[in-house]
Image 1: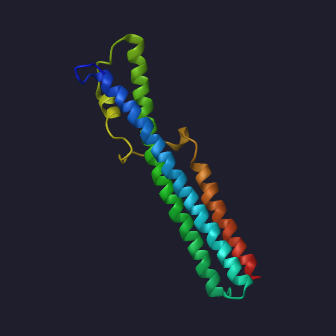
Image 2: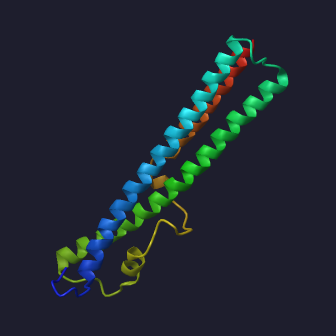
Image 3: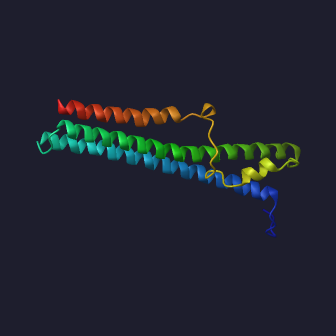
Length: 165
């Protein structure tokens, strides 16, 4: 940045690239907190239920099994939607960071910013909170969410059913 605190396009882009990188790291941090909390809560709850059943404190009647299954499925769906929401916000930031990187690369090659600055201006704005959809065909991660939340939901539900036998 120039020493006289003049705002230039170069300084705006440099600052925004740094900001988008920090935002991506923050989204990753939040995603792992959601995933860790989900796993701790779900597996901890199943552990407590197993302990209560083994000590004959909890009877796994049909209505109790239904309620436990509903809680496990509900928690899994909620966790998956929360995770997906943060993942989509992160990927919007990634998409605009990538656009900004392409524009910066072109500027580095040619020495000039493109004449049409609409994409440049859009890339400099807050991107995580926009309502734009994500093209999951070009991104990985959604299948992992299905496996993580669907798999743990299934395993915990089956474990409770087996415990009731």
